[in-house]
Image (cartoon, rainbow, N blue to C red; front, side, top):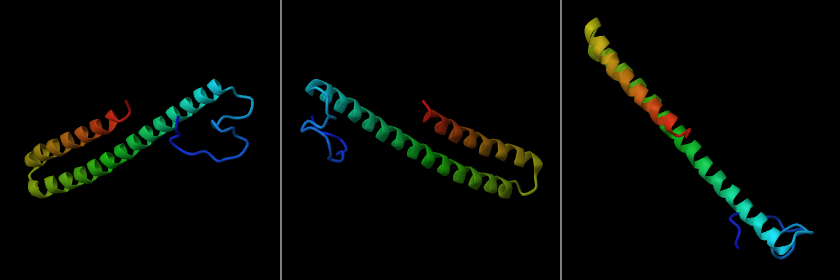
Length: 102
């Protein structure tokens, strides 16, 4: 069984298990280590994706808020309508970020 991440050489047997481990224990250890490394890669990718979605959502929400203020041109009823649209987008962006927590 190959490793996802090579480990430093040292007091390891050829099948890459600490001294005192049987061959089957060494292979089981290696499988568990590889599973944890793969889980770490997936978790890191999800965190990076959530960060990207959050940053993009914040940027676009700010742009929409500024545009709503500009388009309202001092009209309070138009401002309410346009702010509702901007707030709806911000809530949708937040929902997308929350989906990464599952």
